[in-house]
Length: 418
Image (tube, rainbow, N blue to C red):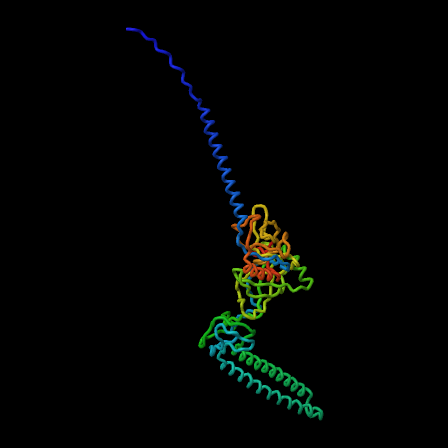
């Protein structure tokens, strides 16, 4: 057999692993660059498309007017007078003249107590008075006779002196009887209980036939005055200097009372007075405001939100609060120019009155976007709904009234500034 020699195989060339890693990394980087490019291109196209099509919005014009700076606090309605009517006479209740919740006037009858025992006591006192008056008259007649006899030296001077003292004794007795008669008349008056003030009676606490005791602590009826009525509220001591300044200048400081939700104004009054010391535990001072309450909107012990007008800012630029937007840097609004383009403009927000805010950075008369903020961008075209815009402009015009601002605290607040 022939021996054949095997020819050597050519060497096989393998690609190192790190080359594959570089290839994969380059592919991923290329994909990322391409994705970012496509995303940027799509965003640019979307922005261009948004710029070409107009976004429907409503606007209002910034106006110039006045807005008030208020101190806001929690308050409690407190009657000027509250009377707990009790009995000063003892006896059976004969009649109850009032109805529960009735408005009564001073002097109106409320409760009648059996007066017969007191009438009898009055008759007895008057009888005793008449008896003693007769004795006094008789003693005075005798004294006159004795004095005439003494002038003729018919009797001793001592007898005249004794008769004079008898007259004095009867005069004292008559005076005592007159006091007893007056006391009996007063007790008789106590049997007919009348209202001491104008106000509203509460729930009935006694019925005819009940026996009441004199000077008892049990109330027969409770009467609270509703017109006028006051509200007591506490403000931070930091607001005290400005309040005192206004009071020293004789300014009548207006106070508004709102319901618990601060949406409905219940009544408008004025500051009456303030307490004589600051509560060191809370750093607040109590104030009392008085309200006419002609419609009885305020009720005793009712919880209210009180707003005290401290100052009025004159001639500021006012816009709806809803038009103000905020980002991480500042507050801004969208101002619609004459070319129908919305431009974002930074502003400084000041005092707020509900849905009206005083700002800096916008001139009165400029158009401000009030909705559509989810689609608005700087420089996009907009189409203004003039019908709704005019309506909002009219409401904005109402913002020239005195405003109400305040950030409420636990018991007191200060004027709100954004």
